[in-house]
Amino acid sequence: MIRTVLLFGGRSAEHEVSILSARSVANAAPKQRIEPIAICIAKDGRFIAPERSAKILDGSEKSGFGDEQFSFETWVRSTKPDIVFPLIHGTGGEDGTVQGYLETIGVPYVGAGVAASAIGMDKAHMKHAFAAMKLPMVEYVQVLETDWKNERDRIVRAINNALRLPYFVKPANSGSSVGVTKVKTDGDLGAAIEKAFRFDEKALVERGVDAREIEVSVLGNEEPEASVPGEIIAGREFYDYEDKYIENKSQLVIPAKLPKEKIEEFRRFAIAAFKAIGAAGYARVDFFLERGTSRVFVNEINTIPGFTNISMYPKLWEATEIKYSHLIEKLIDLGLQRWRAREARRDSAMKWFEEVKALT
Ligand SMILES: Nc1ncnc2c1ncn2[C@@H]1O[C@H](COP(=O)(O)OP(=O)(O)O)[C@@H](O)[C@H]1O
Ligand SMILES: [Mg+2]
Image (cartoon, rainbow, N blue to C red; front, side, top):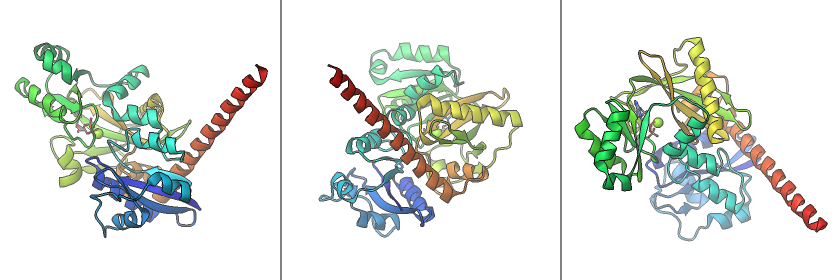
């Protein structure tokens, strides 16, 4: 039995979605191989002991406050779980912080490591990594809050020169479309940038493309594979927070209706994007397919994509012939494999030091 900690909740706007992802995994994990243990991070940022976390997972308890007495690290040392499956989307879960904590206390985990998680979360760093691999992206301008305060007019001119309306303004670190604004007139630009600064000190202004939104699931470690592409048809003007979590009028089309050569292009770019940030285990890569020009742009990568049984990530694998329960098992195996390979390397590094010491 692989004793698997489902780590969920967290302090981000995606706390509730995270509970749904973990609940889905707990229900679908193959019982003969995987023993799920629930651990919730409360909305106040503190950990909750397994007994109460299990109740949060089944919906009979709330997750507002953590357990004062419970220490996750102490619990890990005594219980010795085999692996942690972090299912916290967005800030404080998908951004490398949880991964760094797990590394420090020495417990294996599913998915991308510290650097890949952090790069994937920060849209500015992500764009640099993608640019280095020559991945196609929409034109954009980065704005730092300090620069905005000091030289607002110069920045507005730079944006007007570099891009054409409409713009999309977004915080570099956010997620779930929180803080994202479509700007249709020059007069609305300043307010949109300032809105983005509510969430991060770095904002990005992009050329808004009239595009279909295509997503691809990637799975694996060193030799990742890509699923068939799927399409999101937004229920509102764009795929914003209301559309994602409140109105639920958006539709998933799986597989996306695309010509063969485009399908291959998306899969190739998805794998390249995964490798560009050095991801591991899994990630969902989101694209724009521009109407009129048929140009493909990589929009972003998500290293902890929505993972309920009806989310895009598992649905795409189902269409590519990997069932949800098997996918869970695969991700756990990939996490263990990666950890073992890294342990072996740590051992070989130690041996090298000893050899050098013996020589001197
Ligand atoms: N440059 C753009 N052109 C057109 N639509 C965009 C652009 N950037 C973002 N959007 C719309 O906003 C949504 C959220 O933006 P995204 O960059 O994916 O942020 P998040 O990380 O919050 O999901 C996208 O799914 C899309 O509908
Ligand atoms: Mg997105």
